Image (tube, rainbow, N blue to C red):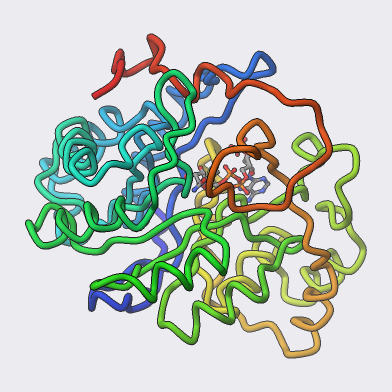
Length: 341
Ligand SMILES: NC(=O)c1ccc[n+]([C@@H]2O[C@H](COP(=O)([O-])OP(=O)(O)OC[C@H]3O[C@@H](n4cnc5c(N)ncnc54)[C@H](OP(=O)(O)O)[C@@H]3O)[C@@H](O)[C@H]2O)c1
């Protein structure tokens, strides 16, 4: 079996994080409900990932797959494929658990569902606090962070971080914390390069993880107004050809050379290998400059139903007010049958 060798970055907590992880969010269908159609495929692909050498898994309470992820990881540990120490498991605390005391409830819930006794990294999934009824709880993320510092000091997690925080929110957090976040996980791809955020994070020794590293490159996932590039973009194709690599490999390599961690999601085993075979070539500065030109600050995922909530981190769009989709509020009978805990 082919094997991959994924390097690590050192976090400000002292722990090493593999620079490439496996994303486990299956997304929503056109009714805005969780899409479980690829659930089986995803678990088989995850198993394959661990067999070939992936050690970093990105999940979240929201994704409803923690029990299944835990089952695969624990099986691989039992089979002797990997040890717990070699794995790096990230999960995220959902918006219903932003009170200081609730953070521990959420983290203990994730540990139970995953069948683990510690987590490598836990993130505040979003800066907004929203109740299961969809009410704006207006809880300051500084309070949530106190809960994160507490679960860290209790040894339930090894590193703590945030997700979807903008620069101002991160600066305020850094100015008012005992423990700095180790990571900020945000949408980041060729069209949304997050230059300012990445530069600020560098000054603070905070690592940036890119979600949706392919952004709108895949035509079927692109909104009608999405700018270039797509996978057949001539500039990308020419660069890829020069190195004997694919366009996706060039994209992931470019993000790696910017010091960014990526967590592409795929349910296709051949892509698991493709995405990890990026550590045997180096893009030249002129190729990097050509790739940087695609950055037009374009957000491919716009959760506008949250835009009027306190601490919403992004620019607002002029769209009619919508309710938060129910599947992102109350836990419905998803795969995990996990209502609220
Ligand atoms: N913190 C947050 O708020 C947040 C938000 C969204 C996502 N995330 C995390 O980030 C992860 C990745 O984000 P994402 O799933 O939105 O976007 P993504 O990884 O950029 O894109 C996933 C899509 O890319 C395709 N793909 C993967 N590798 C490919 C390759 N080599 N060639 C062609 N197509 C390829 C996949 O297809 P197939 O599956 O069909 O192969 C899938 O359609 C998620 O799984 C989740 O863990 C976090």
